[in-house]
Length: 353
Image 1 (cartoon, rainbow, N blue to C red):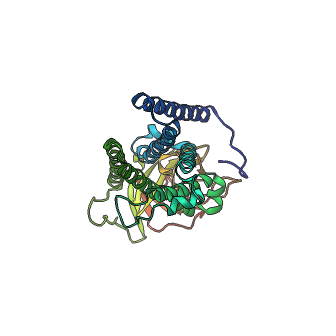
Image 2 (spheres, one colour):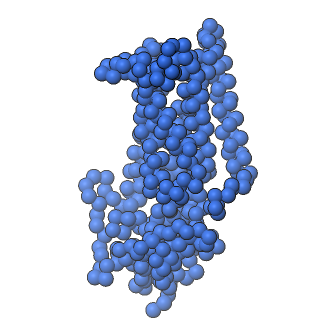
């Protein structure tokens, strides 16, 4: 977390991450050029680099969209999640270079401005095969620009987490537009069907990994794959049984679904507290984190909250909902009704009669 939007100091992990990322991108670009010239030595070098930039951006977008689900399936992928925005900005720059060179190559020799020419040179909007795929790419590029431009936490804080998250969910719309852009472009230019096949494989991968993750999350919540979720038993005082004290390791949490919301129940210093499982930063799973220096620490980006109040320690101001907790022997009961974000709650004391 940073205060007053001061630059976060670079550490070794960030340097290694970005060096690997940039080295891989540069290697791919020159590898693409070499392979292209090897099989067709008469190709124009400008045309090769247009395809190199575009394909690099498209592949990187697949990697970006895979990181979230893979991180849910295995914590080994979390290091990629920490700096995923670096990858997103790199992807946008590659897409921008592709668009710049394509505009210059195909639309810079007429009477119209290149961008105007891009949207009016092909008007076959009612024809599937001849649909203006260029327009799909242009709209996708605008979405990717908005995401790259608002990637800093300054925008996350000022737009608020829900708005920021909704904006960045636009990556899925951009991905769909780019799938259409690549496939229709390949169909119109009669290139090798291998390109269309590769795009199809990538699409199946992205859809499949998200479905697998969604099914696993539903199973963790105890929700049926089909039909309405089972409703927990609420006692006369409005509390729901969520398990035993022995179920929770020290300074860790158990995640339970209470009244349709994931709740993180933490055990620490002989006490039990419950908060919303959703971090205010990027909706990270707080229950998969741990208590560090007395604060619940999000496993995604290190945002912290006091377990008794759901408030971030000063000077930070983030707040999340809390839940009343009580113990019956070693059994934990959590109120089905959340408190307002930042509401202090007295923890349940383990072993207290």
